[in-house]
Image (cartoon, rainbow, N blue to C red):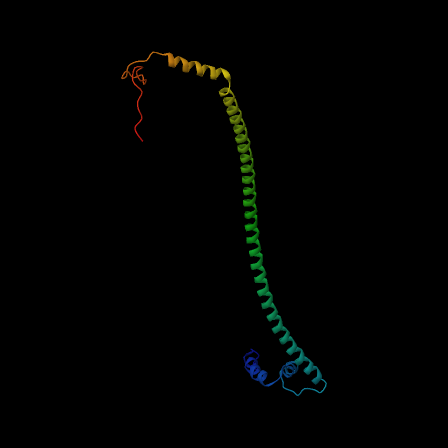
Length: 179
């Protein structure tokens, strides 16, 4: 019998399909010759089969947990990216609030200065108006006005058409139209 492996490979798949793993293991230990399991090995073979099934079940569970972990990791990565985006948006919004507050402070100061200037101007106008009214109410102006009127009445009159705007002294008074 040649030991190139072709005969062994051809024989093992058929044998593995018909026998349990413990039986295949026992045959392998015996050098490839089939033999009946010894009564002492039966409990160990059952324990080996049980452990193999538990191992397969644990591998299946582990694969499921890895998939769940990968999904959770992806969701956490997405949440982290979203938090970064929101943090950047919040920082920009805070910068805009600071700019708006500064502009409001500047506007408030300019408005205060404008009100102060307007109050000062109003006070100056009231003062000037008071002075003007006082000047109008003074006696020298009244005396000057009275003298000017007297001088105008004493002035010589010119005939109509001379452009003086006064009626000739000899013209009869106009009669008012009948009502």
